[in-house]
Image 1 (cartoon, rainbow, N blue to C red):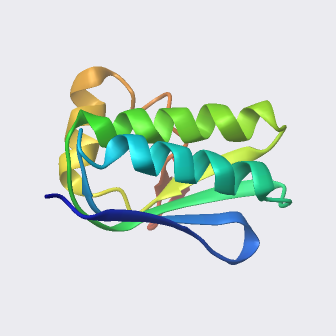
Image 2 (image 1 turned 60 degrees about the horizontal axis):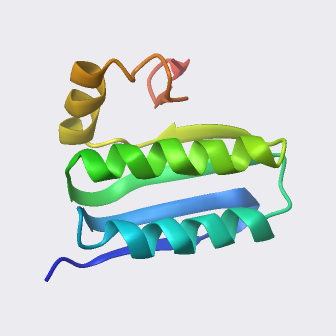
Length: 108
């Protein structure tokens, strides 16, 4: 079975880790939604640096978390997106939709 986790951190951070797939997606969705609802910061930073592997479910989670945050009037920034997720986003035409940060140049 796949293992994954979403944890809240300081300053509105959501840290995703493990394998994001159809087995872990529903639990991560509920947990992330709850963390976003409880958050009080102006911005939600979604950190994907600990994601080991992701299917399109990972992108679906990022889109859902972005929608949740925006519904509460907060900004979103996604950092550390692994190459497999970035490639799926590119092929799906989502690179311009997601608020990705390029650590070398700032927000893309």
